[in-house]
Length: 245
Image (cartoon, rainbow, N blue to C red; front, side, top):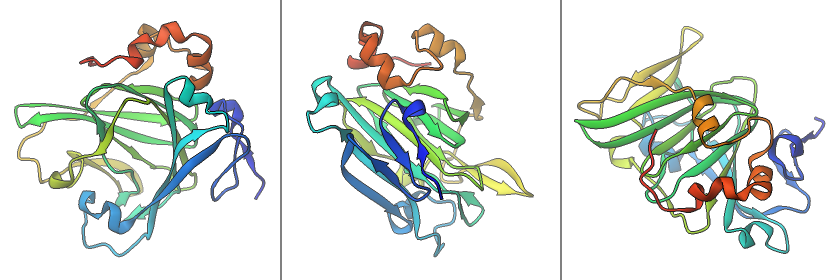
């Protein structure tokens, strides 16, 4: 399979071989492969025995001179091949940063994103985004995010940017993941409630176009390039906050 140049979508000299990310100047400091056993606590069907691998996470991508580190940025990439875990589409673990916002950009493929702020049965918000190559969005502090590859013939590759002071952690293991699961039923993508939640709001579709415009995020230029060229526009990104949608 011919390599796919990801530079135009990511702003970084990276290639996708069809199996993995192939770096040139910019390389990850480590790579984690998330297996079935790793993500089992967050699955709809916890008795599954396949697929073995859900996704790979390339952590802290940078060049030898520490270009992003000097800018106070941490760049990660998620690579998720198409597959099903029973009736559920493969997905990432739910993760949350309590103090800082996070930026995401889809640099290959597409799928769905779940965003959730849950503090109890009477106080919760759940959003669903449908994303494709070029989609950009931010995750406010206190929101959990789950990436889902709903395309059965295409790998999903997402780039994540956080301030270096941000601390992201896996969450919702005790609730079996997000309050909704995205499944394949009758050859269609459907959303079903997680029975571990006694009460939860209806899931909402979220239009990010006006939110990006409000933050002066340009739809076409890769996020890393926007931050480098117009850093003053991203002062909000480097500050602890309680921002919300």
